[in-house]
Length: 156
Image (cartoon, rainbow, N blue to C red):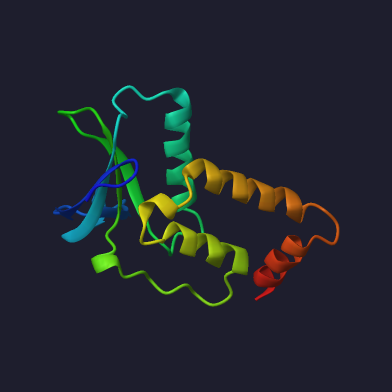
């Protein structure tokens, strides 16, 4: 389907995602044969350095502790169109995975904003980055409400 920044298609990944390196056999151990979403980023043929940094940040963040929401498996490039593609977990028929207990309320609110059924209502990557940066700096202030929320969640 068409989205605000590109298209999303479903694909069957025959070889699958790399699980780990099998040192004994010197081969990658994979999860073969599962469905993924391919998000093609429109107008990404000649990306700026800022654009590539955003993709790297997305990939890094997606592989951090909170990636139980939607896993990002990697970034690729279409050999014919030269547009970049993000390979991510396929969300079946719009169903969202459950949000685990103990997630701080601000994260839950952000997740729900990102999952809005209307793509135009979803925050941009820049808006998400700014929100997370603001949370980070707020947590450094003494007696910060947001800092308390995140600290309490870390204790659970």
